[in-house]
Every structure is written in structure tokens, then in C-alpha cells.
Amino acid sequence: MKIEKMREMTEQELNNEAMKLKQELFNLRFQHVTGQLENPVKMRTVKKEIARIKTILREKELKKEA
Figure (cartoon, one colour):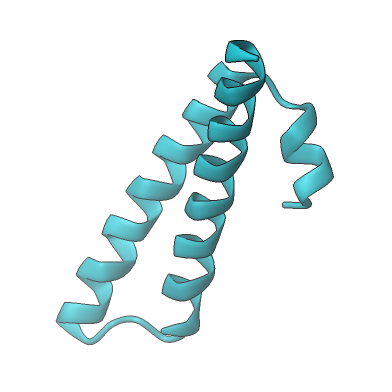
């Protein structure tokens, strides 16, 4: 997902997206442990997406305070 699109989302939408990605990361880790994961790079991209969402949430939080 593009960062510009993420910035347009509401906090609730971002939180929902983060929860979906965390669930996906859990499933990927499970597949990795059992040897069923075909693309281990997918784990890295999901982690980065989660980090981007958390960053945008923090930016929104700081804007509210200012």
C-alpha cells in the first residue's frame, strides 16, 4: 500500500489494517516454522508495512497534540 493512501486513512482504518497485517505476520511465521513458507521475503515486507502504519499513527497523534 502506498504511503499517501495510508495518510488519507482514518486512525480506525489504520488500526484495522495493522491488526490484519499482524495476523498475516503470525500466519507467515507459523508457515516458516513448519517449512511451508514459499517466500520468506514476504515476512519482511509485512513487518515494514506494520512499521509504516505505526509511524503514520504516531504522526497523527502528534498533530492532535500540537
